[in-house]
Picture 1 (cartoon, rainbow, N blue to C red):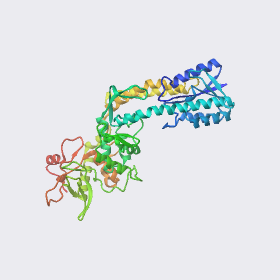
Picture 2: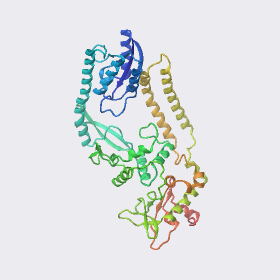
Picture 3: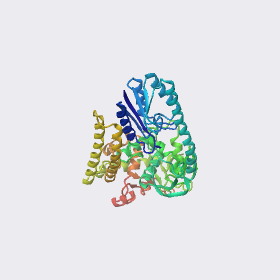
Picture 4: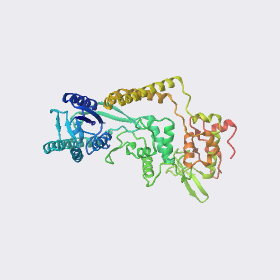
Length: 496
């Protein structure tokens, strides 16, 4: 007889790691004279009806049984298989139809082997399945009031929101968990570096910069994604910017239950504008060639420093500040676009433009940090290669060893990110941009303008015609001088 193992550990288990389940299974097989077969592992996956993720190895186990490759399936206890009665019945039916035995070897009782084809064994397994499902419902009924109470107090939810960090204090006297333990005091505060990225994403989005373009820029600059794994994507930015939590509110089941629970990253007006824009049916994240005005929402009003928009006038289209309490700035759209285009193209042609688009040369400290990171990642690959060899350790044991490497890999990666200066516009070619500037989509041009400069429109005197000096308060990012300072040093503004 050959036994395959299905090992699962949910986030609620205490001391029942998949590695421990495998060790007990191997011991049980030796004692009973059973040959060990395949190991299927789903670590940290729930098997209840409230689970939010599928179990990949459970699906592989079912295929394994359907193809007639299984003789016996071993489980630490029935709850390892499923906590959903319907799913458990389907599993028992599959094992019965394929003549597969089920062995339960963990828990408080002695190990037992059940044959689903025998009615007595089937009834026992069905009762165990009902008990496993009932345990989940009882646990949820105990936990649910605590979750609601925690939310009403303004405590942040489990996953840490990008843009914030948390400070944990002493246990609180007036708040307890479902298990009866006193909850620790917790405050959610800004992570200034990440919060600045969120604000920039919000500003660029309202300015019409495509979400996929923003994701491309973040990936090219080496900015870690919110999960710390994978890459930025336009859809991820869309979902992130619609969260009410960025206004400082605690949300439960889609409703705000505690306002101003922590410092806000986005003001209410900006957040409302983002939701209106991002929740528009049929919105695309990719470059949108229908964008017509490259500075609408990208340039700023000089007096109030808020974004200006396009407004039709009898004399033609104009950029104008439309915010209540200001309304002091406007300029002809064509003249302002032409002036900014000339400034940007001239900047792109300067000899020192290239460093803004390419990574800085690696210094010895950066090279050493990258070498350390590569060595750790190579060790991680070696672990999986060893598991693939005949007689090598199982994936569960390799995963346990990998957990010791992950903190080292993360620390080494953090050192690399700190030492590597991210390029401002990596992925773009400044020479090509300067040569074919009018041919680039409006969204791409807007992204480049906002990455290179802060464009500010100053008021004009009554009856004053358009002048380049209306942009004198603008400045290049990384340069403390305004464009006006630069023009004065050169003897005057460029000709119109």
